[in-house]
Image (cartoon, rainbow, N blue to C red; front, side):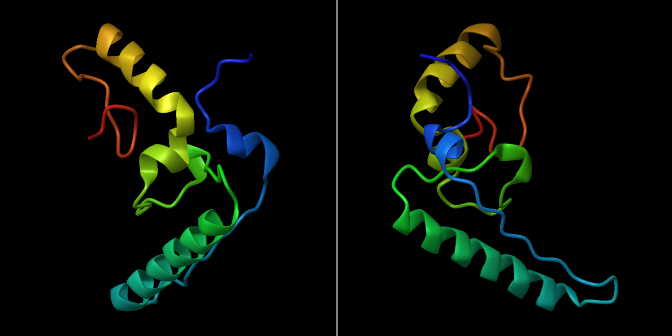
Length: 99
Protein backbone atom coordinates (compact mmCIF):
# COMPACT_ATOMS: atom_id res chain seq x y z
CA UNK A 1 0.00 0.00 0.00
CA UNK A 2 1.34 3.41 -0.97
CA UNK A 3 1.23 5.83 1.96
CA UNK A 4 0.38 9.35 0.92
CA UNK A 5 -1.43 12.36 2.29
CA UNK A 6 -4.17 12.89 -0.30
CA UNK A 7 -7.54 11.18 0.19
CA UNK A 8 -7.86 7.87 -1.66
CA UNK A 9 -10.71 9.22 -3.82
CA UNK A 10 -8.43 11.79 -5.46
CA UNK A 11 -6.50 8.98 -7.14
CA UNK A 12 -9.59 7.72 -8.95
CA UNK A 13 -11.80 10.75 -9.67
CA UNK A 14 -10.71 13.93 -11.40
CA UNK A 15 -12.83 17.00 -11.95
CA UNK A 16 -11.94 20.65 -11.84
CA UNK A 17 -14.42 23.28 -10.68
CA UNK A 18 -13.29 26.83 -11.03
CA UNK A 19 -14.66 30.32 -10.98
CA UNK A 20 -13.27 33.80 -11.06
CA UNK A 21 -14.11 37.44 -11.26
CA UNK A 22 -12.92 40.67 -12.76
CA UNK A 23 -10.95 43.17 -10.66
CA UNK A 24 -14.02 45.44 -10.37
CA UNK A 25 -16.31 42.67 -9.06
CA UNK A 26 -17.86 43.71 -5.74
CA UNK A 27 -16.99 41.84 -2.56
CA UNK A 28 -20.64 40.81 -2.22
CA UNK A 29 -20.58 39.26 -5.69
CA UNK A 30 -17.28 37.54 -4.91
CA UNK A 31 -18.83 35.99 -1.80
CA UNK A 32 -21.79 34.80 -3.90
CA UNK A 33 -19.39 33.17 -6.37
CA UNK A 34 -17.45 31.49 -3.54
CA UNK A 35 -20.64 30.15 -1.94
CA UNK A 36 -21.80 28.81 -5.31
CA UNK A 37 -18.53 26.94 -5.78
CA UNK A 38 -18.75 25.49 -2.27
CA UNK A 39 -22.34 24.34 -2.92
CA UNK A 40 -21.35 22.73 -6.23
CA UNK A 41 -18.51 20.88 -4.52
CA UNK A 42 -20.84 19.62 -1.78
CA UNK A 43 -23.27 18.33 -4.42
CA UNK A 44 -20.48 16.37 -6.10
CA UNK A 45 -19.31 15.00 -2.75
CA UNK A 46 -22.80 13.63 -2.09
CA UNK A 47 -22.74 11.77 -5.42
CA UNK A 48 -19.24 10.24 -5.28
CA UNK A 49 -18.25 8.10 -2.26
CA UNK A 50 -14.75 8.98 -1.09
CA UNK A 51 -14.80 12.28 -2.97
CA UNK A 52 -11.78 14.31 -1.95
CA UNK A 53 -9.76 17.32 -2.89
CA UNK A 54 -6.11 18.14 -3.38
CA UNK A 55 -5.44 20.72 -0.68
CA UNK A 56 -3.52 23.23 -2.80
CA UNK A 57 -6.36 23.45 -5.30
CA UNK A 58 -9.31 23.29 -2.97
CA UNK A 59 -12.23 25.35 -1.74
CA UNK A 60 -10.95 27.57 1.08
CA UNK A 61 -14.40 27.38 2.68
CA UNK A 62 -14.76 23.56 2.48
CA UNK A 63 -16.95 22.68 5.49
CA UNK A 64 -15.80 19.03 5.66
CA UNK A 65 -12.13 19.81 5.13
CA UNK A 66 -10.67 16.89 7.10
CA UNK A 67 -12.47 14.35 4.95
CA UNK A 68 -12.16 16.28 1.69
CA UNK A 69 -8.45 17.10 1.95
CA UNK A 70 -7.09 14.16 3.94
CA UNK A 71 -9.74 11.41 3.95
CA UNK A 72 -8.87 8.21 5.80
CA UNK A 73 -5.25 9.40 6.07
CA UNK A 74 -6.07 12.13 8.60
CA UNK A 75 -5.61 10.12 11.80
CA UNK A 76 -2.23 8.77 10.67
CA UNK A 77 -1.06 12.21 9.55
CA UNK A 78 -2.29 13.80 12.80
CA UNK A 79 -0.32 11.32 14.89
CA UNK A 80 2.82 12.09 12.85
CA UNK A 81 2.23 15.84 13.23
CA UNK A 82 1.67 15.51 16.99
CA UNK A 83 4.91 13.58 17.35
CA UNK A 84 7.08 15.80 15.12
CA UNK A 85 5.50 19.19 15.86
CA UNK A 86 4.17 18.92 19.44
CA UNK A 87 4.01 22.71 19.88
CA UNK A 88 2.04 23.30 16.67
CA UNK A 89 4.63 25.59 15.12
CA UNK A 90 3.83 24.55 11.54
CA UNK A 91 0.25 25.27 10.59
CA UNK A 92 -1.95 26.58 7.82
CA UNK A 93 -5.64 26.87 7.02
CA UNK A 94 -7.14 23.35 6.87
CA UNK A 95 -3.79 21.62 7.29
CA UNK A 96 -3.46 18.57 9.51
CA UNK A 97 -3.88 19.79 13.09
CA UNK A 98 -5.89 22.93 12.22
CA UNK A 99 -8.79 22.05 14.50
